[in-house]
Image 1 (cartoon, rainbow, N blue to C red):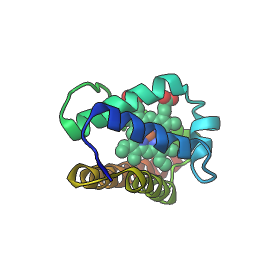
Image 2 (tube, helix red, strand yellow):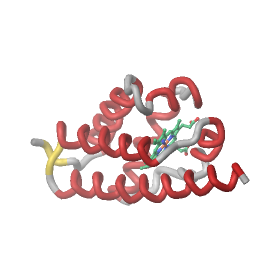
Image 3 (cartoon, rainbow, N blue to C red):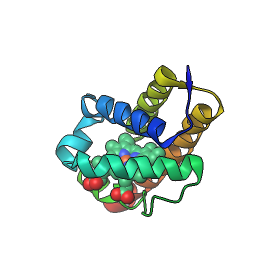
Image 4 (cartoon, rainbow, N blue to C red):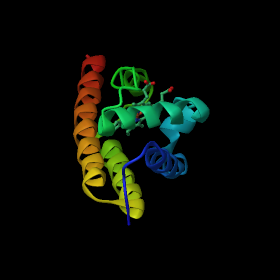
Length: 129
Ligand code: HEM
């Protein structure tokens, strides 16, 4: 299996991941119906995000947490959604890549998803009070 080592690899990974996400019964609606994502803009952002996280190429400038709060206000993003996100991400990596960087991509996604899940849950709780 191929190592995860170039920007092209990241593009392939991200494309295949969001292909799954778009058609997914558990989290697809956040992208398709709640945020009505423009994929031609979202995908290049995600290439840069992962290139920055994994290869230290600082091509992504943004606040990944911030964009999720308005979505969470419309429909709460729950722990089970993040767990499912991570499941799809892990499956996409394991179907296409192996090696240390592939492992790192799984590990980092888990960390960010946990943190994001915690922040969304806290925001949902505060919004209710
Ligand atoms: C249930 C889980 C998640 C859902 C439903 C979700 C949903 C979304 C949606 C709908 C957008 C697009 C917002 C827009 O352009 O209108 C977005 C952007 C983004 N998401 Fe997520 N997301 C999830 C988890 C994650 C995780 C775990 C990560 C990181 C590992 C992540 C990283 C990002 C980044 C980097 C952006 C682009 C931010 C920017 O515009 O600069 N998301 N997400």
